[in-house]
Image (cartoon, rainbow, N blue to C red; front, side):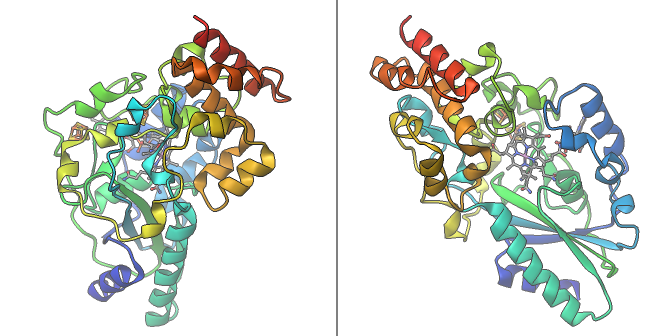
Length: 339
Ligand code: B12
Ligand code: SF4
Ligand code: SF4
């Protein structure tokens, strides 16, 4: 059954499937608690909710007998760091260049889950991607999909770092795979590459300093010290993934819809988007969920960091914006550009 399931996972478009037991990650509850106690989740208050489920997959669904972990590659064809040398353009994280992975991965998970139930009548499934109280990376490591690198994301010797994770919990007992161990060795490229110093120690992240958190999750003004370190990254950040030497072995993704839409647009063009313009431009994209105000805030921080005086007029035009955080970001950008 497991071999047929793996073949079906590939047929629906997943790059790899592995299996683990729901109780295979006993260490995560304590680690999650330490992360929360240190306040490293910042404004992501939802991480502290339903913590008994997040920290223990057996409590989330006691009837589950297996966790099927799926990986979906989105390996970029371009160099994700090249845009950082074009300060008048927007650097958008690779994963957000096309369609929202939540939609695409969930559809595939549901298709695979339906197939499983057809094959094994009487069994039940629940599918999860990203937003559920499930710690996907440690489960994926326990399933042998890869290991959590010093940057805390999952990577693999032959998939590299550029893949999303999803999981299917099921009542069907399946033989588990062997867990993977870390192959980071003495490398510390990701730790050294982080522009904001977001790693308090290897294998640990302080989300409050991570540009991915600051641009996507953080509401309101960003600490000015951190703003100036964000460069032109306006949505997410890829630096710690992009420098990883294991990506030399990364396989190409097969889902074309993860790329090709956003590119590296001029900051001046993005700063002037109103609500309707923003929604129309980013329909179907993960970027849409942060809304116009947070998006324009990020664009204005990038303008402030651009050292390009040609961008001062567009920043000045937003100093009276109805949104106080946008207005603050615009004034900050104008001040930086007139130094
Ligand atoms: C919250 C969250 C974020 C937060 C916090 C990230 C984090 N590292 O915690 C923010 C907004 C910053 C973020 C950013 C990104 N994210 Co995110 N995020 C999540 C989410 C929803 C939960 C992660 C979580 O549980 N964090 C809590 C911490 C405590 O758990 P942890 O990271 O596993 O921490 C472990 C280590 O600290 C370790 N540890 C602690 N001490 C020690 C000591 C030793 C010795 C060892 C070995 C380990 C160890 O134990 C912890 C438990 O395993 C997951 C989806 C999910 N439901 O799992 C996606 C997820 C992790 N994100 C993902 C992605 C793609 C990203 C970005 C690359 C997006 C981008 N380009 O901007 C960045 C990467 C930043 C980074 N370096 O992590 C993918 C990762 C896929 C993969 N291959 O790993 C996921 C799985 C979403 C998905 N379904 O595909 N994310
Ligand atoms: S995503 Fe960027 S800011 Fe966040 S930890 Fe990685 S390099 Fe640092
Ligand atoms: S860059 Fe080096 S330390 Fe970081 S995850 Fe990759 S191999 Fe591990």
